[in-house]
Length: 213
Ligand SMILES: N[C@@H](CCC(=O)N[C@@H](CS)C(=O)NCC(=O)O)C(=O)O
Image 1 (cartoon, rainbow, N blue to C red):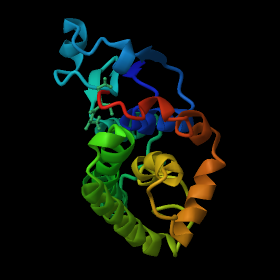
Image 2 (tube, rainbow, N blue to C red):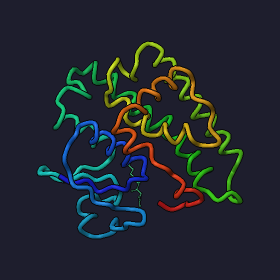
Image 3 (cartoon, rainbow, N blue to C red):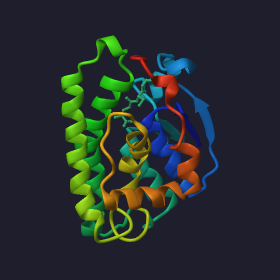
């Protein structure tokens, strides 16, 4: 089993963190960014988009980080992070999709527009708007987290991974709002997890002012 990934990529961090939670042995193949390799024909044959993360095992290649999270949960942790019951599963999947189309979309637009864009080229108005959109999304999550320790229930599930993987950057960026109370408590729980510390809590200074991957 091998993972083609770049450690500073947020989509890769979701998968790296989850692999850490699963305690799986696999080969890490640095790919993308300064490592290159995305345009190699052999890599394109695995993932025609030329993107990371890309996973390879005896069944073939798997790409798209959220698909890969579900795949790993199904193959290596039956029922634990992603239940088989359709209603229970939908409670988890809605937060994965919500993350991708809501919080993730707003926060990553801010991260690229502010952190990764050289100061002189920033669109401050747009950045303020995305900061507000991201903060508003976290208010929705905050109301949900009032009732339990993790996004769905009192144990870590796939619902926590995509949102949680972005929260370290959100909490440490100079233009974001303070985390709302229940989100802050949840984040404090994530920070205690060794796999989160190892794969998500990484400096992101090298991405500052850097518009390419
Ligand atoms: N929707 C895809 C996005 C994949 C993607 O855009 N990956 C970025 C890293 S976050 C990438 O491969 N960029 C090129 C690079 O790292 O060089 C996913 O969730 O896996």
